[in-house]
Image (cartoon, rainbow, N blue to C red; front, side, top):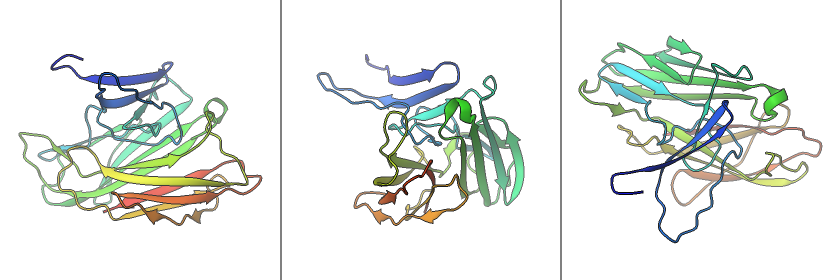
Amino acid sequence: TGTGQYWHESVDLGDSLEQRGGRSVYKGGSRVDLDWFGPVWHPWLGTGLGWGQQRTGNDLRFNTPGWGDSGTDHTGFGNVWNDDSMTQYTEVYVDGVRVDRKMSSAAYAWDAPAQEAEYKVVTETALDRDRWRLGTKGRSEWTFRSAETPSDRVTHLPMLNLGLDLDTDLHGDVRAGGRLPVGIFAEYVKDAAGTGTIRTGTLEVSYDEGKTWRKVALKKDRHGAAWNGELRIPRGADSVSLRAGASD
């Protein structure tokens, strides 16, 4: 691209799903491998999102698309208004009181308290099993504290992205009866203010559609907020569900 121009990449699945990357920079003569539509699908509040996770004075705006494909900085948008095989609902709580709920990735807290309060954003996704097969249910939560910010500019809120590193085949399948390396990593959304140090990562796994959960032992990576573990998938298992978390 020329001076003053930026390169973004977007890959669509019909009118139902868009995977949007952040700003890309490629050097002439280089070769870069790109991965799209890989599991595990989950919210990723990436740099290509455009807006969200912001506070201006006492107005807060959230945008939490639910189907990022685990590619680098990929945010996944579902057309929940025109495709009845997918739904997403997003809620905002202030000190435990729900102030908004929408069928959307977006939700808001208008005229929030000026004093510091606890905020929780919850988004729930669902996909029709007959069409999508995998990733049929998802739930993500972010909890943080915030007080009034300057009203003449946007302040980015200290919310975390949580990523998953899991090797599957092109259909999103893994072999039962074996061991599978798994990794999780966390980082703040770009330009977040009031950040701390991400200290803790947790992971649980279920092989019966979330009826029972097992804790996965994790080892912290030497570099950054990342942890690695191993799944021991039982013979005869039909599915793998993951429940991960990170905190500062």
